[in-house]
Image 1 (cartoon, rainbow, N blue to C red):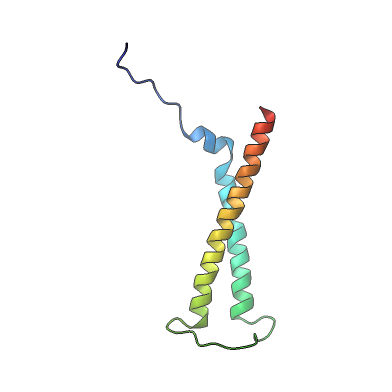
Image 2: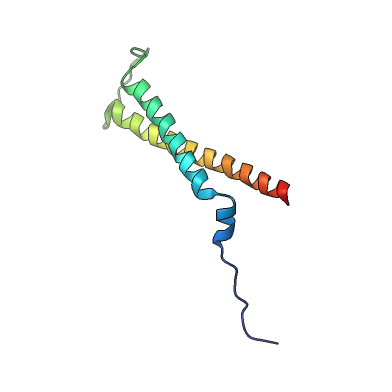
Length: 96
């Protein structure tokens, strides 16, 4: 028996085959666009003031809705990236 460890194939092949960088870029763009739109509509009150006002401690409404916009952007980006990657997996599996 040989004590030599066989070389591993490059690990970036799957990432490239599934086009993950493009999917991530599309996901980030979709997430940021959605979050920016939601933030603008809520904070700038583009449809007028919302019914019922609340007190927003420490950060004020802009700060709290900024944090919520960040969460919305990241979760949307992850969801879109995952869905696009699943579509890429399906297309590659169908070709095999």
